[in-house]
Length: 310
Ligand code: 8YV
Image 1: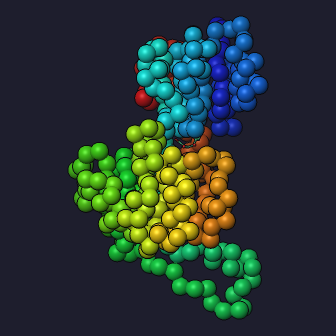
Image 2: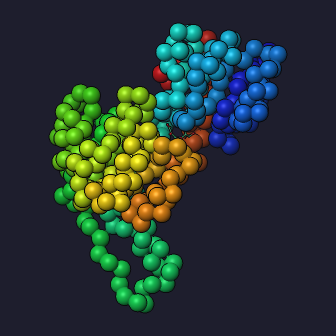
Image 3: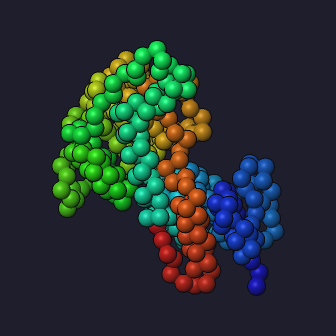
């Protein structure tokens, strides 16, 4: 059987990629040069593999007239022009559920790292500063309000963890949900009521720069912003200004507007805890995500229902 030609914009995790290569004719497209040469391949390209940050524009789709399916190794699909895919009958799959716990763990870690000043404490010992005096006191979490923007699977898993830490949970999402947490009908109200504002919503045009100067001002000078969603949700220059003028207290970020490039002002800021988009970055989870991509591709080409269609 001819292996379907598959455009690989991002390789699957190491434990799974060799299996993909066994079953599909993979065309490397991880650089502009390799993409150009893959697109000139004589074989009709029927599948595309990417990850959560992959961009698929109508211009790229125009060059892929035989494309049947896009499978993303990630839950977010804000880089995919969904209406353009739907109009062309191209199917899309992502990897929900398997990464929920790991991403919620990282959100929780960022809450603890910012409140208990753990990065500074670690640096303090690497600088052998303890003999000069004790490390300054941090802030307790219990009794603080965590305001979660987006109470989907990941938002709920964050709420479970932060409840266990003694925090009060509030949230804003499109509609109130049957959960024992306080619903705020606007993000502004949520930010006003929160000590920690935690972003767990999808990216894309609907959430672009939702967190702007006004929301940051509402979070206030003792407030902390945590972002494990997408960098695009936050107006980054407004965030830097808020940090520099003490409009908010500190930030914990796993995602950035222009990753992997960060603004120097953020890199240098002492009250910014920064992670290189590691929410789902464990061997176990990435392997499960990759397997789900492969299973979706196999289901498609076997004429079976997709496991996790978007
Ligand atoms: C990773 C993510 O960026 O799932 C997502 O949407 O942002 C992350 O898990 C990535 O897609 C891993 O391949």
